[in-house]
Amino acid sequence: MREFIIATNNEKKLIELDRILNPLGIRAVTAKSKGISLDDVEETGSTFMENARLKAKAAYEKSHLPVIADDSGLCVDALDGRPGIYSARYGGHDSPYQKKIEMLLCELEGVAEERRGAHFTCAVCCILSEDEVIEVEGYCYGSIATEPSGDGGFGYDPIFLADGRSFASLSDEEKDQRSHRGNALRALKEKLEEYLKKD
Image (cartoon, rainbow, N blue to C red):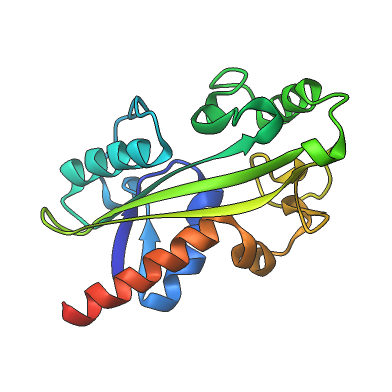
């Protein structure tokens, strides 16, 4: 089984990526598990893809192994697309997601249901070699609830509604089928299958 370095410190994201990549014969591993220390990358990009590219490049330069990095976030229509690329830093980089969710709901207080549209974006950059880079994006459209629900998922999942259910209330399989990351990784899977065939 091939091993791909996943440029993240988020254990739940690693598990999600491994679950989706495993059928391809790819095991998602951390740099740390390979004895490689990755520095924190300053996300200076102006788009999700630019930030994913920065993280992937930094990890590849350190490891010289196939690398997958993603950048994702929540874009809320009534907030002109915020928090967007600043989703992880919304309310302060170290503030827990419960606090970020409280802040977001506070900003949306009084906003009518029909104006609470939102979408998740996931940009994935996969560096296979110096000359082979795959980039894909995935989206999931829904709305923001008035209060959190569900005890699964992570991040903003408790307040993101798709077909009336929060992401935090979905099973892993249901979330993979609907989520921005699931959609991006299915696109990546198609491109990786093409690559692996010719490799």
